[in-house]
Length: 359
Ligand SMILES: NC(=O)c1ccc[n+]([C@@H]2O[C@H](COP(=O)([O-])OP(=O)(O)OC[C@H]3O[C@@H](n4cnc5c(N)ncnc54)[C@H](O)[C@@H]3O)[C@@H](O)[C@H]2O)c1
Image (cartoon, rainbow, N blue to C red; front, side):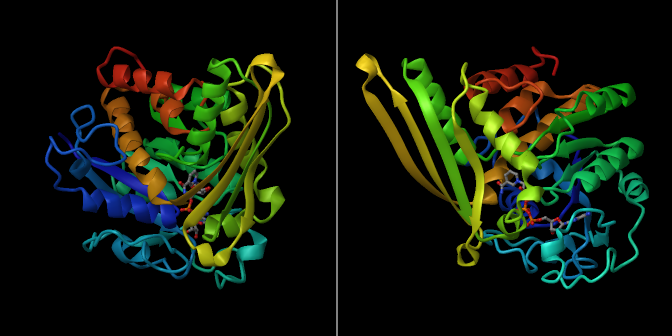
């Protein structure tokens, strides 16, 4: 099969796990099961077909370094599980816009808005012949996300929105991608087994067994830059919407809910801890309470899912599909345009791979 040419905006922990994973599993045989992927070969594409062709960041500790080194540069702190060879892909300076929160500027060693003259993103995407651009910016990067979505569109690339800004779930953006005939997937990547999918599964289970859910909360703590960024409430308005709707969309009634990032605990590094609570009533009005603690290495948790998204996007490009890919978006993202139970989204993706479902 042809190679899949991927550009990345935001070389943080998620990008690190993705790039590491692609090299970790590069030469896996077709009949070997890879942990965390839907299929080792997905619509004819192997992991080894993925090639990183461009990368953008604003952090002086990453700019100018080869992607293979930048992914291990501070403040990235995720697990190193793979040696990545020199890739010949330098991290290029990008416009900062609202990408770095004011409370993080000092720790980034940044004083002004753009410490290095940014490159023309559209030109770099075109020159690198990227098939798609993945948006891995910090939560709250509204302007910057729209900037990259616009750049991908102008450069003729598909766009994957891993963050809780609304692009694939915005009818205006979907229409624009339809008009130019480019695929779109998003919004806000859903991890392999993370807080969202566990919460969704438990709520669906209780609901299907006739329990009336009365209240629920999901508190999350972690020690990576994603959690440091989210200590400021005005950065995470759409993160709360995305995570909350992922759960409440499965309930046919309204209940008191509190879901979101809850604190930054620096020594946890890339470990994320989730405390989940659900209270309800069952037969005879008797009570039922579920309290659960989940501990995961945060960034690799979404990287395998992204490997599948990349290959679904490539199928979209091969089939000349413009607009949002609804099946992979429902399966792999917390805030897709069409929200369905996860088992149904999986069936949709299988049908999409087989060409039985258009998008
Ligand atoms: N960890 C997961 O499994 C998961 C799940 C869902 C969503 N996400 C989201 O994915 C995103 C990335 O997560 P992460 O842990 O890699 O975050 P991170 O903070 O480690 O990385 C973000 C990177 O973006 C860079 N950046 C900031 N402004 C930029 C700009 N204008 N242009 C280019 N680069 C810029 C930063 O310097 C940093 O390197 C976050 O929004 C996170 O919430 C992650």
